[in-house]
Image 1: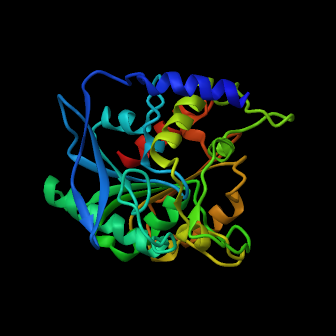
Image 2: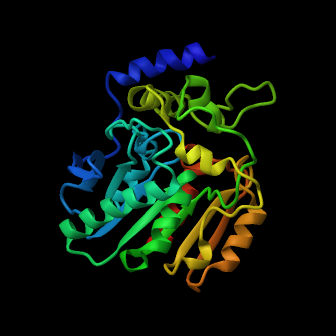
Length: 306
């Protein structure tokens, strides 16, 4: 099964599918603490969106997560086609950003300030006063801390698959994670025999995602954030009570990393009365790539942001 995925992935590396005509991308230089950060912009060539939206990646893999460019699965390109200028940031040491010597350095608080640096650049270039932020998985921790620390910069906040509390105590012994094909496929729903459920996630989506993981993250990724998350379940990781922006918490009820009950608890602490909690039955951690759920997911995100 994995060999089949690898074969398709190698084919896709030669040329991915286009999402829609008129979507263009470029990379904008950004540096913080002497480290070059990868910040990619995705926008409509004919009608660039005035609204600025920053996408914040998860724990192990970088911002390509949001641009699975096969069929119409790319979240970044969908949002760029619907009135947003979309920005995708790689935290220091991740993806196309400059490598770091100490993998423990880019922890959740450090990453939140990488996000702040990207936000400053986006706001300066766009002339806007605020931007919207969407974080996935660990990106809900880093994006949530950014929103709490810099409320004046945030319009709306989306916490997708929010890691509200620690995932369990485990000692992280290495500053860097060794990324593997098997690990990259770990967010996809599986059948009883352990094989990926292709009724949930199409083979072309799995292959595109895995090929991007190999291309951008094959060297490994920092473990500072992993050390933050692998703490007791009584430790809250997202400062929801300190977030002022309208916030959408969106979670699948089959997500193995996220508790719906904890999301309900976090929702109850949010200050802004325009905040929302949406639970998607049957969806899991990677619902933005799941065939039965990705349209419901992105339409909910779009409706909230608009």
